[in-house]
Length: 309
Image (cartoon, rainbow, N blue to C red; front, side):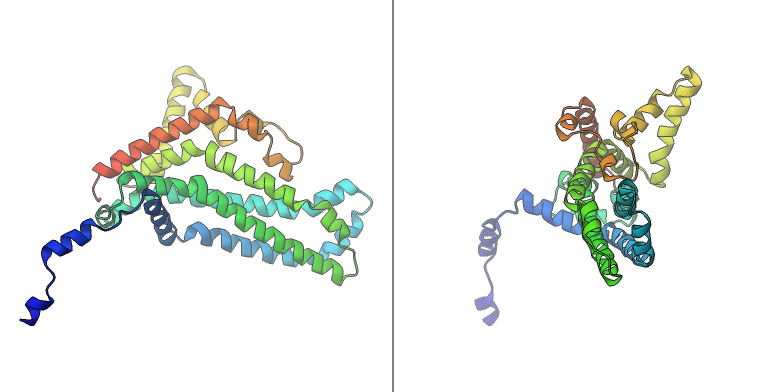
């Protein structure tokens, strides 16, 4: 009697389920991104570890900072390069680290799901293959550039505080240090470089790596590189040309402006050789984005049809 009294009619349960608020596409994407960051902690742990090493090395180097500042006092240009160089080196090292992390993440993003058979669980959730692939593509296109920018800003700010404390402790003025470091301008150039080059301009590379990750049954790194090498080798043997290799270099280096000499390679100004309006008007940008979209569409179809390895 008590069981019957406490039982909930099936019709009532059905009406409650049907009346539940549907999950919006934005929320599905948000939780998919949360899942990627939770499952791939190297996305932020690797650059954080590198940032700690950079700060440790910079802290040791500040022992000679007052002597260097005094030696370069008669040459303003040399003094500017001496002050700015560690900060630019920190940014370049963090960008290199996160680029490597992005490559390995993309190659394992869809391949790892099939290898450990977790794809069966994720496909049981109310998240489409399109949302899953777009969430994974957002990591190298958006999340990694913004994360690199945030970690670099914090790292350089701490470096500035360490350098200022060392100079003040030695009886030097920090006016020269702060005068030669236009950090806010450096950060704007860095943000533009990361979003424009590492995100948008490299979109075909990220799309290709995700496509290979969705297709390959083993060794995705080899499948991502060998076809490109084979195309270049066949072209060289058959036609004695290197157009395909030049095209890859053009894309990887950021176009003709990226390969042109821009003065000191250790200067932040060398990271932004082209204005934003000119960058957005380049046909190569939109052609690359179209190719990346085609790669991602193919990756969606492969994730929908391919089962676990």
